[in-house]
Amino acid sequence: MRLAIFASGDGSNFQALADACSSGDLPAHIALCVSNNSRARALERARSLNIPTAVLSPTEFADEDDYSEQLLDELYAKEVDFVALAGYLKKIPRRVVHAYRGRMVNIHPALLPAFGGEGLYGIRVHRAVLNYGARWTGATVHLVDDEYDTGPIVLQMPAPVYPDDTPERLAERVLEIEHRIYPQALRLFAQRRVQVEDRRVHILTAATAAA
Ligand code: GRF
Image 1 (cartoon, rainbow, N blue to C red):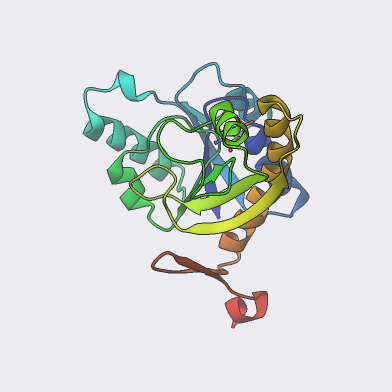
Image 2 (cartoon, rainbow, N blue to C red; image 1 turned 60 degrees about the vertical axis):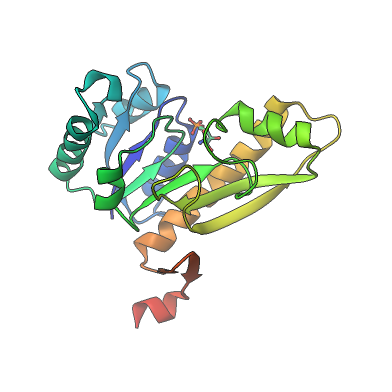
């Protein structure tokens, strides 16, 4: 699997995926790191691992078509066959989503369909969970479709919410879970163990996938 990782910020999920590739836990090669933000720490992490990077911000382009074309050019040039969004704050244009349908995933720091959708990202998600009074939150890896956070769910893992939590503390607890389930989810794709039927994602056993 030749992977592109899109990240706008710190890139701790990028790092978790890169670590899983080097340890052999994730049988994939990171062929490209894409960011909309030239100052993203994720880009530094990529450069230090000699992973090619591309900085493409939608505002630099005349229109969405132009932006899509540039993104696709970068992805095709590196022969990317799978895309992982890891803290990427820009909406992926429709054309790119369609080109990678079933081959593009995102990680969200809550248990979807709760606390997702437009405007719910980063610390805002954890603030919303606390304000709502939810007892559990967690992380979700899902396929990307045309809307925010609505694609079929691949993996989820819960985390408790404690009475004295702050959004920051909760973010930290959830991030640890993200770092565990994102490599696991991608490994399932790399092993061709994921089958999607409408909204439902079936995880095949390794033996069934190999047969
Ligand atoms: C993570 O919580 C991810 O779920 C969300 O943005 C955050 C990115 O963290 N989409 P990092 O940049 O991977 O450290």
